[in-house]
Image (tube, rainbow, N blue to C red):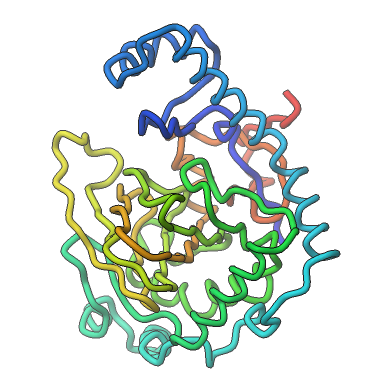
Length: 344
């Protein structure tokens, strides 16, 4: 497998302050006070002790990110050693898991006469621009998959947090789903669709991913704040179980000011996936009852992100990492590539 890297902005940018629903960048306390103290005051962070509490949470998150590579490898090794799956078969993608509608879409997209116009006649378009809906899995698979996730959740095996915004969920690479499930799903079944739908933003050259499941439940995470993804293309599949409300909402691309944005609500049905551009701002409305599991696949194209990091908007400064990391690659013929050691 090709060597993948992360961008150094991973350690400084897009740190989510849940209490204030704010993403921040932290390089130093002086920079942070200059950039955010007035904004935080307007959001209710008025005392020095409150500000110090914010700084403490930021430093804890930066430390988590700095240690993520090692901690993730340790968790994966421990899971492999001590965890016994409930449904071993769900770890290996089979065509019988997939909805007939998805197979029909793939068959068309891989035909010699496939066009974007032809695909538009087969796929459901949402009111939000370039957001598409289609069944991904059969109900029987979703049931078994959730049972496996809940079995793991209730086990003594270590668990990593999917990202700074979701407190409850599972990193699927640590659980062993990457090689035999997510990778073939992306390469064989999703890339034919994204190559037609998103060729202008890397959909035809997706070569890595980050996959995780998130859980929404009463007294846990209920919703998800407005954000964009570290991806060129995202697939979000509603797995179940029984829940009320919790639709997604989409705004505009991240470059458009919030004041100029009008959000559109999109229903999310069990077994169905919503496919959208990673830089398309979106969020999830709160569920009012039940438990909801979603599969999220951030699909990445190194050919696109090597030119401009989607998170910091700059040419990436590469930091060595493991696995697919954040999907950046180093071009040996590109003498302008910037390299950074993760220890600095």
